[in-house]
Image (tube, rainbow, N blue to C red; front, side):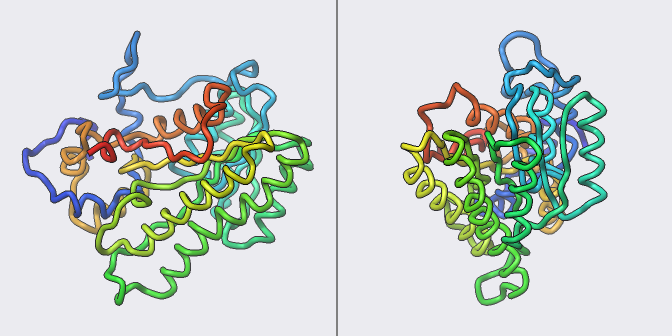
Length: 306
């Protein structure tokens, strides 16, 4: 795959076809982003890197992240750890979880991987409890774990795939908030950021269940935000387009689309990076966003503006 973020062809893909991979991502483009001095360059955003700073802007904060063994979750876990947070994260793949755990510790951060599956409410409850048992509180939760569907028309959707997307994307977020919110209410504060998608704002063929799940995440976010606004707990979500994660690589391959063709259809003419998503989550979790509740942050690079 080329690291050049400029499209290699002038050909365009129909917008609806582009949406097939709207919620997913491609690993490696973040590393190709050109470091830029001075004002941020939106065409070549800087990657997040460097050693952990124990006195960073999230020093002393306890951060829980679901689905952080790869992609956006992994990058966000590392980003919070670099800023001094104590991070707990989960995922089903123990080998990847242990690898991320080790990498965070190697850069001087603090992290704890707890193998668990968001589709199982008991495992989610135990994950939240283990976090609180270890650190005594829960300041920030990023409910990121998600599953993409095999594209198909409604009548052709595979039932096990339907069930997996439902349980992961909707029930997983619900279970997470169900057990996170009581902890935050008891301590008197907290921030929750949920992973939605551009697919939660639009209707497109062959992604019915995935879109339904992300519409549901946005709905759950709004309800939870209203229920907890006077409890000093903020609940928001983010909606990416195509992001540089392994899921996008699979999705592009399914449709025979190259990264360059995909980038040519984005308003910013590139694929967004996991570092950008991590920055968005950290912004929503920070003191700079105290008036934001129930909103879904557009991190598509301009797609939703059109």
